[in-house]
Length: 404
Image 1 (tube, rainbow, N blue to C red):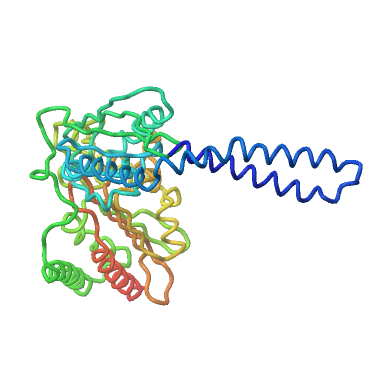
Image 2 (image 1 turned 135 degrees about the vertical axis):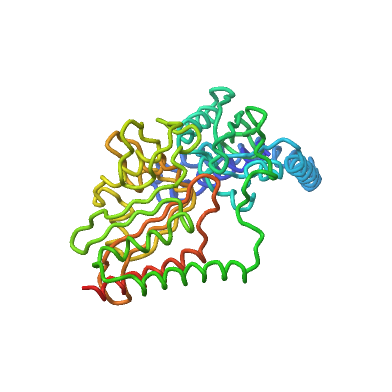
């Protein structure tokens, strides 16, 4: 294959040189002997070099070689898919090219969904930069590497990732072969790893969403006239835990202000979270009881409550454009801004999917922005849920307009 490519390049160079010789026919007569010598040299090159190489390549039986190569490739593909060890083939940017059956079961991600997406998108935020760096080093020939990472859907179980360089046939650059295996006895297999979607019928999913819409409508219609700001707060209480782990509400027209932040009721925080405390703490904006150290989640809630919405790119874009944003495994950890210590909020809250919905009617202005997070092993927001949330956001905006 390499010899054939080299022959093709040399033949292409010859064609370009012949074109230059043709254009040299208009040179003065006293310079024609030089051009003639060059033409004779090119003819000798064809007769002595290119033609023998062409005959040799032809006599090797390209059809037979191609057939053998195809059989070998099919065999290697079958072995790759059936090998009982979780294996992924990625490029130097960690984009998945192939994911075998064992790796799909191990990670809980379908091979068809993973292909073309960065493998780092399925890892915890804290592990992504290190994995990218090691993959790039392996791809450029710095040797094999191994590191411990955590899957985003199973953050409590460490995974050992072994990386080695691989040069696919006929490709100019090396790829990276990634072997995944549990780093301890806890194996995130398909039996205990949440899959990409539950096995529910369309009718059941529709019923669950309609129950949520009914609860939201009932709350909005029965809410007393406590003022416009109370409407999104009551809506946030309906969505909290039932629909999302985190609910953040920003209200205002000319300038947004943060009015509500609700975090997970499990105030012990995510496994392995920095600043983790065994002492329970509150999950809302209120501070912890005297004598208690704030939990990891309570600290995040307080930091989110103190954040200026203008420093949150996702909220600013939703307020400006008036369109819903749905992100599954957000690639950019800074999309919701950073806290005062410089840590991304999405990383601190262990966000695996998010919905950012502007509170606006069909023709009215944006009256606020509602942001929902899901974290840990909870299923990601679906398109159907985003559509239902878009409808509920219009109902909330109408309720707010009614109290003007």
